[in-house]
Image 1 (cartoon, one colour):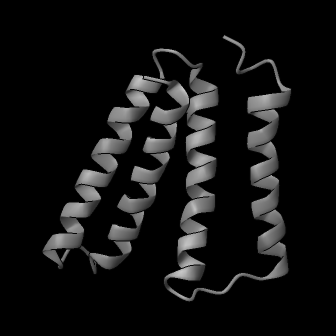
Image 2 (cartoon, rainbow, N blue to C red):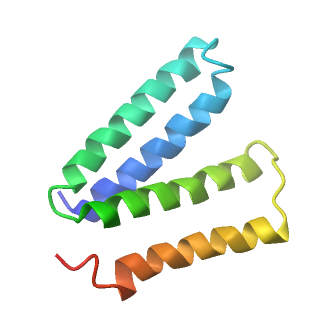
Length: 110
């Protein structure tokens, strides 16, 4: 399968797992707690498949960075968590970093 699709699935799974972690109420809610285990389990499985074709620094950096951006977006949209201008600029810098590593840099050439 296409490594970009696998990585996108890993990122989505991490976002689901982290959202479920917030909803689990300290693992006292069974269904969200199961979502944590399934979400993170699937994320790591898909990451392992991605690593067969893409360098580890690119995979992990992209997964972690876009996971942060995705979880922050869920926090704002779903949970009404605030974001200020500095936080927004920080998120833009994270996205710029992912762009640099994946498009501009030769790190992702494989």
